[in-house]
Image (tube, rainbow, N blue to C red; front, side, top):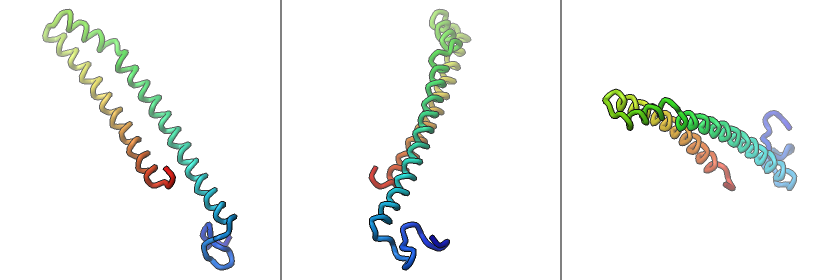
Length: 119
């Protein structure tokens, strides 16, 4: 293939390849690119899901938050309620950040799928 020749061009005439071999080669290269992109997305999604699971465990099982909320329910003093509200607010911030991160991945994946034929 010459340096100025495009993939899928006839090497003699520079015209688009119409042979079955050329068409299959073009499809093979495209499907290989799609497969590689899919593998990258799967890896990124798995990594994000693991991060989400770890973060949710921290939020849900957070002993300080549970203790503060329990204490505020048992003894509803101003300090106890304030501490419980702070813990709840901190957990909400973490959840919103994770939702934003996941939303970004979903939007990027949707855009990519919209650009790929056959999806």
